[in-house]
Image 1 (cartoon, rainbow, N blue to C red):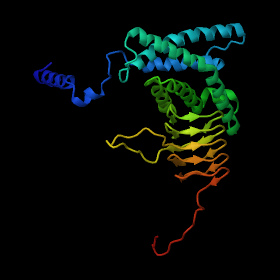
Image 2: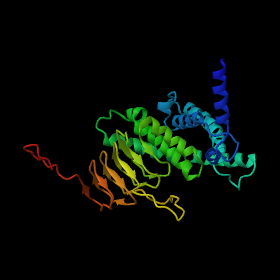
Image 3: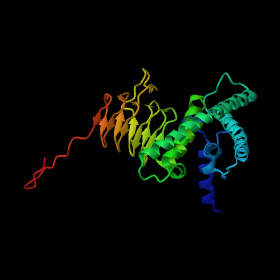
Image 4: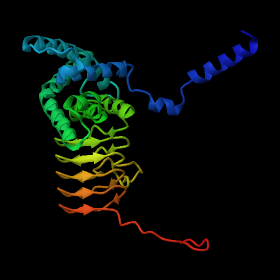
Length: 305
């Protein structure tokens, strides 16, 4: 290499190797390995093969063989999940209650077992979501089409798993899981949101569901719906407070495309929110909130409003 090239490379290596104050503040608190996105993807795929074995695994009609295959996948899931949770536990701020590597491993294994113990309920909820999509989409040919190809199914598989890990207070991994689904489907569901059974999202692109949102059962959303916050409250030092700030959607509510429901408000049960509406106040049960009727106006001589 010529002298100029060497000089440029060496200068930038020196500059980029020197940690800035801002970089130091943002660095992980420990030198432990970080969770692997690829291994988290593997965890999701293992759970999919356990919950939907006929779609994400080789089909086995014989129950004994089916049980064997699920058992093999579950053992691999336990090992992979334990390892990634152990990295997650060391990812954020130091946990004073966990001081040794063995304690980290024991805690990670216990959390992994708790997730595995929750898989039957996660499976039950996911099958209600599939049923809700089938009931709400006249274009759906069969259940298999929804399970195997609909973006909402992928988003809800990721969300249901991530939400349980979030409940177990597993650091960082729940957010990795939901952001993987977000990047692939355009559906952004925070793992902290609470969503009941028989949940459906039609089309899905652009849907946003915030962290403290509470959604009841038999709720249907259409593309572009935002269940978000209206403002962020701060403490005396100017730091944002993580307090309930997203909507509560009660049972049997339908929200049509591009509606924005903002703030800690309640949309009462059995209500319908029309498309392209901005809602920042409580809506009583059995309500219909629709756009004002369009007004046709004629202009003459180039005059406008």
